Length: 246
Image 1 (cartoon, rainbow, N blue to C red):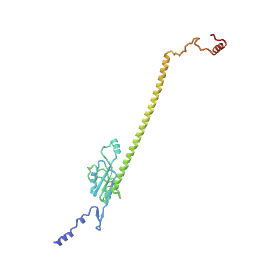
Image 2 (cartoon, one colour; image 1 turned 90 degrees about the vertical axis):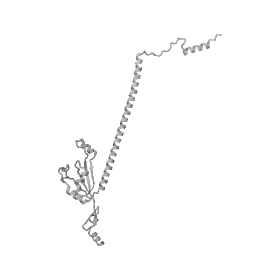
Image 3 (cartoon, rainbow, N blue to C red; image 1 turned 90 degrees about the horizontal axis):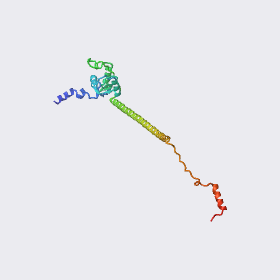
Image 4 (cartoon, one colour; image 1 turned 120 degrees about the horizontal axis):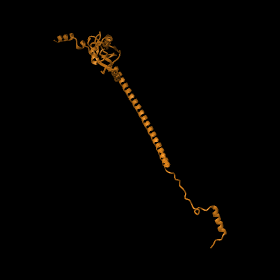
C-alpha cells in the first residue's frame, strides 16, 4: 500500500511543477526566472474612454497590473468648453502595466495603428486607432515618481503665481493709498488758499462799503502847547537879571 502511494505520488506532477509560482517563468532547462513587469504608454485617449474600458480591451493580450490615465488640465478643459466642446471629463494620455514585459512588448507590436475595438463594429471605439508603444526599462515606480515631481512642480508654480499676484495687489493698493494722500493734501491746500482769499475779499468788501476813518489828534490850545527852547532860555535869563519881588 505504501508502494502504491509512492508510485502514484511520483507519477502525478506536483502543483508547483504544473503551475509555476507567480512572478517566475519556466525555462527550457526547468529553471524559473523572475518575470519583470512592463509598461505601455498610450499617447492618445479617445473621448469617453474609461480605465475599465482600457482594461477590457487589453486583458486578452496578457495579465494586467495597474492602469492610469491622465485627466486633462482644468485650463485646457475650460478652453475646450469655451470653444463649444463637451463638458465631459476627458483624458490625454495613459499607462498600462503588464505583469510580463514580453506580453507588453508583444501587445505594442500587435496593436499599434490598429482599431481599438475591431471585433465589435457597434462599439464607440471601433473607429479609433491605438497610439501606444512599449517603453523599455520603465517601471511603475518611475511613473509614480515622475507624476509626484510634476505635482510638486505644479504646486510650486501655483504658489509662485499666487505670491506674485499678492505682490502686485499690494503694490497697486499702496499706489492707490499714495494717490489718495496726495489728493487729500492738494484739497487741503486748496481749501486753505480759498479760505485766505475769502477772508481778504471780505475785508476788502467791508472797507469799500464803509468810510475810512483816520485817528485824529486833539487840537491843543496855545497855552497847552509846550514852550519852545528859546522861550525857556529867555525866561531863565529874565529870572537871573531881574530881582525877584518879595
